[in-house]
Image (cartoon, rainbow, N blue to C red; front, side):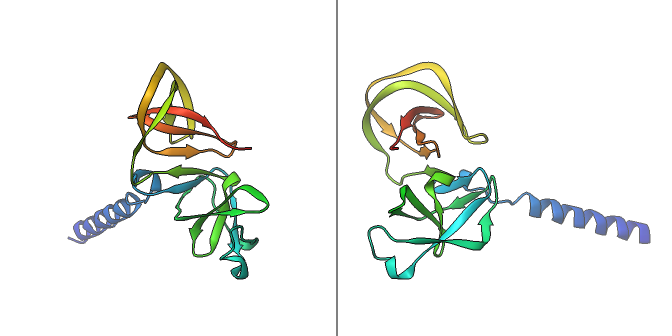
Length: 171
């Protein structure tokens, strides 16, 4: 009887452990939210309170913590900064990351038609890389969905299920 009870307890603990590991939250699956993806350990910055209402606030480095590599973080704010062409994205209350240090994925609430054309790519959210397809999007108004901005000032905008156009940003 003791062996049976022990077996049931061990099985129950194993099942509970499995369930807790299978409930990992991954922002990429939550298609209604914007998020940033780190590809390396990423420094955090705090906005100086006295500049928070300025068009281009000042930021200072947070030295006692950072974001781990290959993690996703919801973001709900963006601010320009004088020393950064691309600015900062907020990942927590007064904790920000430089746009040049992360990949930004925008999932807009409203999809809109835009005049676009060009070669199509598939996009892999595991590697954050696009692969050119042997297809071209003809000129016309196409509804743009999600966009991905990469640190090298390129990006992708979604025009189909896994069909993306490559974009080029500033700088």
